[in-house]
Length: 102
Image (cartoon, rainbow, N blue to C red; front, side):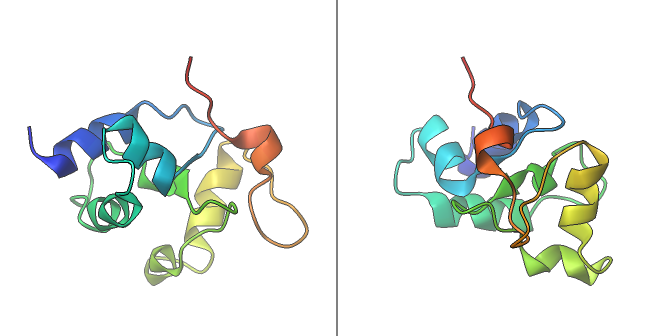
């Protein structure tokens, strides 16, 4: 399997209402210093795929402006629709919403 396919498979495991960080996904796929690679994989995800790219946020719970190309605050909109809670500063409440796989 190639790196992007491994990353997409890991992201598919993030349940609705939870988020994971780029670094977390990198570690899960055996690439502990590969957060940037995860970002590239999210940006390269084919349109209409079943990969929930919107569930991947930065380590502080920040969303990415790349989703704004489709709608303003697009990533936040998708996450809130799944029940993800945001803090007043506009970042995901990581204490409540970070995915912790068993």
